[in-house]
Picture 1 (cartoon, one colour):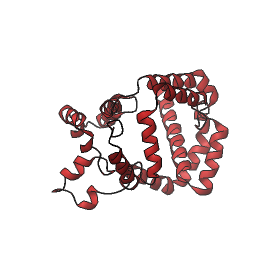
Picture 2 (cartoon, rainbow, N blue to C red):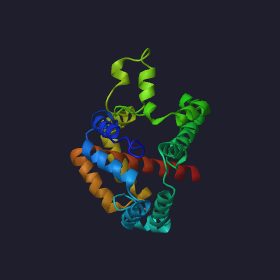
Picture 3 (cartoon, rainbow, N blue to C red):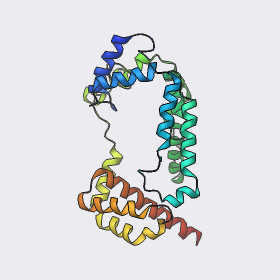
Picture 4 (cartoon, one colour):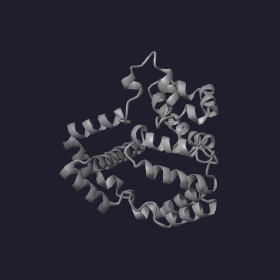
Length: 252
């Protein structure tokens, strides 16, 4: 946005700050961030479409654990490429449109709240998220960018507004460690034997959906090193096995 408005020096400073402070961009070269921003701001739409088309030629499922025959059955590759092409044609023109799109995209906030609402409803709880209040959403959508991101910090207005209520170490904390991931890691470590038993005894339940060879490679790496990537993938397959079995029991 700054580059489009001709504020080159401010954009350069923001890239430098983002490489230190931004939750998602910290650690990246600020020069690379500036080049990427310049590409986004100035490259012709036709050239961007050409790059997107070249990228779509590669299989979007090449690095997943999805069974190829299951993917063909549901035409997942074609559907994924079609969705990517549609997104390229409806690329947001400014930051406000990008934020609005994030609310309603298939993986956006709205669908996430629906999922949490279903989980809570199962236990008789009705969720009321203050950040999902229509008035709050409209207020933040209408704010100028400088109140959302400044000096590389995301959520700048919130970090400053909560000064009377939150310690500085909380408001200006770097990183985005998710508490749920900590629980997941602890669960996988504490219940390692059960995880392995579930995988080894129940894999047949998901053989139709999961590429066995790709998953076996992942599973062996998980048992050898328990790396975060493998741990996450094994956790997802274990969850899928338990879910499929539960559905099958209900059907019976």
